Image (cartoon, rainbow, N blue to C red; front, side, top):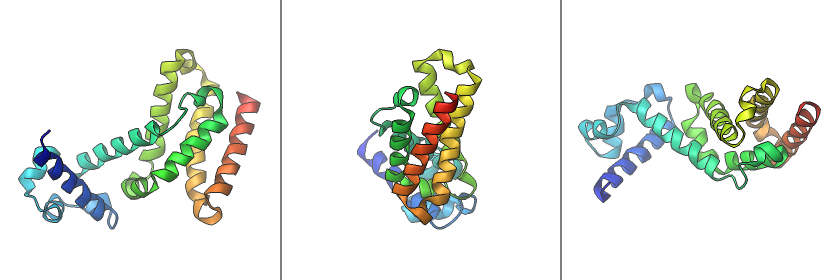
Amino acid sequence: MDLREKKTKQSIRNAFLQLRAHKPLERITVKELAELAQISKATFYLHYHDVYDLSQQMQKEVIAQLLNSLDHPDSVLTDRVQFTRELFGAFLAHRHLTDILFSGSQAAVLPISIEHAVKAHVYALDPGVRDDARFNILLTYQVQGAYYAYTEHLHRFGPDEVLAALEEITRRIWSKNG
């Protein structure tokens, strides 16, 4: 990709984030996005099928960045408390983008996508857990349940207190059931 193409894509993405921060995905038009990015609609369509395609691509990139920022992703199998600490530290570090890209109708996409990515990683490390119902249910509970608890209580109690509670719950569910 040449420099001009990179700048164009960055301009489109910046404009999208500006619009998405203030309105639902369903209300963003290619026309207003192109105007804000100072490009033509035709230029937009050279890079993306529609605003949903753009949103999906950006969401996938943020999820990959979030997971790649984990220092010990394999700890999901060995030290689940550490994994919880790192995962929610990554959520906090990427919060600006996730709050924009995964708001409104897209809110459920983040925890589901994270869970699928974590499971794909786990299955690559230990294919035997793919058919372990208890393991899979506990992992879903840990990732999705903890995510919703985290987002629900973050503003009220703050990240340190919420993370401490999530670590304790993680310790309990896996020690009793793992």
